[in-house]
Amino acid sequence: MKLKKELRRRKRISAIILYSLAFLWMIPLVWSVATSLKTDSEITNNVLGLIPRDITFHRYEKLLIENSSEYPLLTWFLNSLFVAAIYTFLYLFIASLAAYAFSILKFKGRDKIFWFILATTMIPGVINLVPMITMMVDFGWMGSFLALIIPGLGGVFGLFIIRQFFLQIPNELIESAQLDGLNHFGIYLKIVLPLSTSAFMVSGLFVFLGNWNDYLWPLLVMSGSGTSKFTLPVGLSVLQGSYNYDYGLTMAAAIISIVPVIIVYIFTQEKIIEGIARTGIK
Image (cartoon, rainbow, N blue to C red; front, side):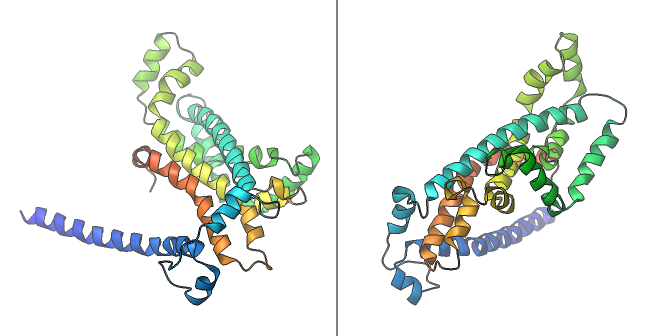
């Protein structure tokens, strides 16, 4: 009885702490939405107000409907969506094949090779910028979406998540599939992939988010290509330029930029939570 009371007390304390943190996290988001809906005069006179007195949607109309040549937000949005979607699909395919090799296949030095690859994550990405830019110039990919998709396909974090999940698949399933005459690609396609949807959801979300929010690399490879090829983070930096003081417009663009991520998470949250629990991410 005492144990049950203690557990309930701990749950209540945990709930209070979590709800308090969630409330604090929501305040900047609510303020951003409110600022995007305020009139220009109210933004100046009521900076910290969380509830607009006079709601206006003209900034969203300007960004989404007008899609002017000065601020083509819809074009930037579609560019980011295209690049992030293609990159996520290709990355999951390549990383899952590599994860299969490092978890299901048996060969000498398998684990040592994997941990060596994983150790490369300790190398700061900034160190690779100059050689990567040189390679993009040599390949003629500067100003091309290929420069935003291909270089990142060797990322290790998603490979680690998927491999950890594959390691939990019983060997008996793999052996029985081999006895039935399936080759390794058949096992990968018919046995491993259907059992690993939650791991793909987790890895895919992290990969999609990383590409969607990437700013420095697109800024470097897309500089000089014209604003029509900018991704959303680079485009938002144009909105926040030194000569732009329309904070409501900036907030409206920021709110639009997070909508796809929220939608993806809402529809995949159960699989993501399950995948995080089963892959052992802390």
